[in-house]
Image 1 (cartoon, one colour):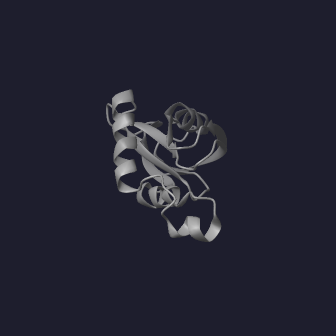
Image 2: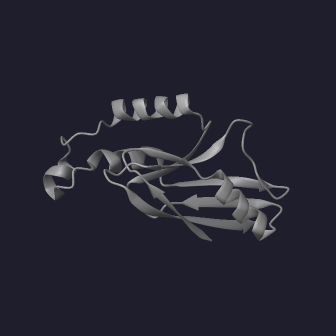
Length: 134
């Protein structure tokens, strides 16, 4: 199954837990795994406590690790100046696999699934969800 999200770019962090949970519910799979991916090289998927303070903390840390600047070889070669976005995606990964038990995602009490668009412009992103019965 697939669904789309519209992003603002620039490390836009979106809670996609409701969409993924709905897909699992419709699948009627009770036990298995759920693989979530963004077919792209400038996005990431992770789990996080989706609250404003932690979201800002994550953005600040990512800016320290891979700052938005033009000082990347990727920018020099291609001119699109989103080298930082590719680095961030490599660090957080554009995919995530989670277990399903009793028809529900296994997440911690405060965990949600976060999709992050690192690119330097707004985009419409497609999210792919694959469910494998266990």
